[in-house]
Image (cartoon, rainbow, N blue to C red; front, side):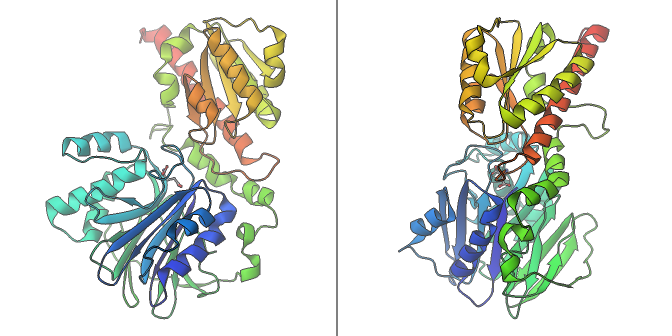
Length: 437
Ligand code: GLU
């Protein structure tokens, strides 16, 4: 989950938002974007793959007026990192702009339903589905933006922190959250929204941390209403004083990226498992496995190929898969794999583990295994990287960007996905033996 900044007030939003995006860069990201609204209600949206500096270059010489806006740094979970998938995502009508951190689990069903109503999609993201859904609800019900958002969020399963703006309404900004952090900074006649406090520091020390299932309506000059999405009741504004200085900003207050990533693990593991265990906690649903049940059930053996820390995650995975699935598992160092005349057949499943999805030796092992007819399954972090593009199926670990050289959260994410995979395959095998399903 990456970064969100929003602003409504008396300053030039462009400057505040760009500064905020720079401050969020420590989180790592793959693309960035900004939407600004002029006083007359016109929306201008700029997006770019790569760095915030690339976005700035893109916006140079363009219309960047306005004292209200939203901006985003993206870490792709649905759709590769490119300009069209970057946020803000704008509804097809061009009326609503939205930035989103998190994942919409039921996006495919919603997308299908919206397509049946004639909506055309221009990105591969789950986020675009949400913005189109809000547009659809508002158009059909003729309601206010906030009511359309509330209704849309009732239909959405997953995790989100969002900030939303509506063309022609330069006085309102809406924010909401579920399982993904969002904080509101309260200044003098100005209000800030951000996914963590770093973009707000230096402007104001008065903040409100939005709770899960809350929605905030911010109206010019400084009216703020927070409501529960569940009960509809107004929440008490719990204003806290921020104790972070501009000097402490880098790396979210931690001394090193590695420390930051170690402490992120409770959240990243939740992100990794989210939507993959049924509500009653009894079944693991890994679509990459279930869609290829036959291959897994007929496999003679699993070979895990990886390098470095991923190889160590593979060693743990081997124990778990062997115990739960009663299948022989071998773990190979990817750089040695190609030279050892590997005896791979079409009854083998090869699992390629790589954080970046670009590890050259692991990619070569994938290509060799496929040429021998094996079914190749990728477990990676970076969406759209070479390994996920070259495998038959797979699962992303969804732990966000890992910048520290010594792997921490990606390692625990890999072990988690290997465990989910073992549980999913074991259950499928059990069902088959018992019920012939
Ligand atoms: N799921 C969204 C996407 O892939 C948001 C990713 C994020 O949290 O940056 O566009």
